[in-house]
Length: 114
Length: 117
Image 1 (cartoon, each protein chain N blue to C red):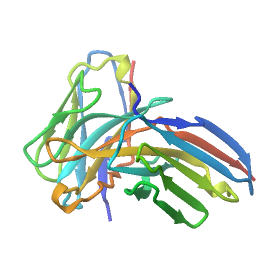
Image 2 (cartoon, one colour):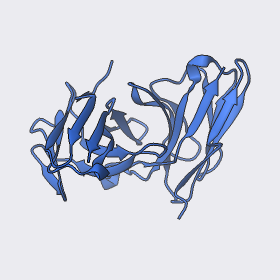
Image 3 (cartoon, rainbow over the protein chains, first blue to last red):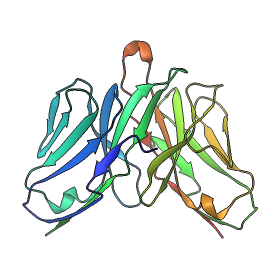
Image 4 (tube, rainbow over the protein chains, first blue to last red):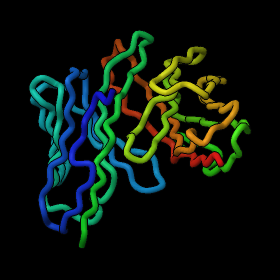
């Protein structure tokens, strides 16, 4: 069972357009992280949100955590070709063993066309 | 500034062969993880090690074994490779402590691309 549903799975847009990627779950998470992955590399953390309703901005990227801590969105304003990549959301909670467990969504593959 | 180092980066195996993927981190992190990434499936946790001396199964552990050799190193072994294990494997580490309330940023290696024929 996929706990985190990301949509859309693929997105191809023109440079300068805005876009929103969604990450939804029926489960509550302690935190929600967003990673970006470029071809041939491992994912790199963009942001972590921990409080219901929290909004964080990273230049042209705006991240929001749902009030109930079950969903999140990533909005990119005026997309640039450098934004191209695979965007992954990951819900986190501590396991009984004390380690922090992340459950990943399937990802949104974004292509920004110059 | 190495971070998380995985070897090998590429490997081709025949069905039934065995191999070990090596992972080392130089950030003094307590927790280490092995994920596999397949098209359309996202990242799935195979095994993890919350701290030196402990290992636990993740979402898809069948066909794999792990060893936390020391705090730095965490290896993944395929005893008898199958075509279904063709994937990109990522090792990751984090330094999350429940009492600190950390939220577990994962630091990933560059991946090991495995093909099983």
